[in-house]
Length: 324
Image (tube, rainbow, N blue to C red; front, top):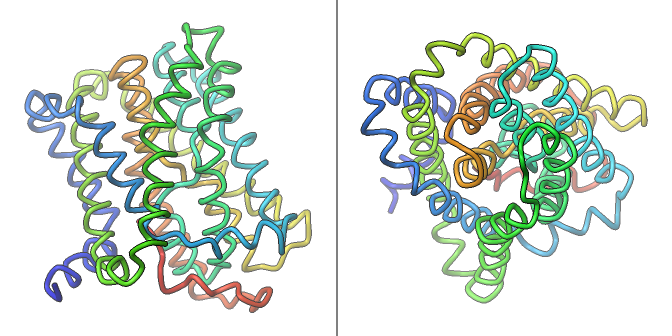
């Protein structure tokens, strides 16, 4: 168990490099990688179940204690990112499937690695956990509507099917994880250190499969899609922080808002794109998964060297249990 926990900690620390390596491997053996695409939704369900295991009712208390801060994150998450994804795709004249992929990335809830990045950036971890948790629970209802609104004019979008998929691969596993944590808390506490290893492995396989399935498209239009993904992420990081500054949130809360808005659940985006559109639509999500972990590590390194205010009482209460 100790060896596995050490491996999990190592995987969590070098998460971005592992994801980059899996993407490169997908380019090298695309045919083998593409064969794994049918398993993407199942893998995401496992990752979401693990996320649910890390959650407790106290994680949602901040919604009542500091509703303004949580609401800021949710509004920015479900407005800035989906609209920015659509605008960038239109500006760069990406093909319809890639436009849908950009919108899916933008309309996804917060990324599952964001809490750890916020912790390393000396941000408000409790706020980050609350934002990720609430946005994940709202995603089944908001994500299909946003995709229908922004991408519907480009490609047919069945919002009902999207809703069912997100319920199956996100909401049900997360709620099940919360219930298991409540009923078997002692047993779950023992396996919590291993969850980063499972999450990293799962996301690596997702990126490996999606990149492999789109190897030809990546080689032909890759530079343009990479540019769109980088701009999308940087736009979210910048506007998330700016929104917190406008509302005069403490520095630690601004950092949390920035990272929560800028880092997306790209695994969910990839699963939905593969299941409801085509593998090409999942390409922005795969590239986003690689890039936002690189940019997140850079942001965390920058902010970790700069002191932040202590923030509201309890701001760091979740710092010991960052999720992947």
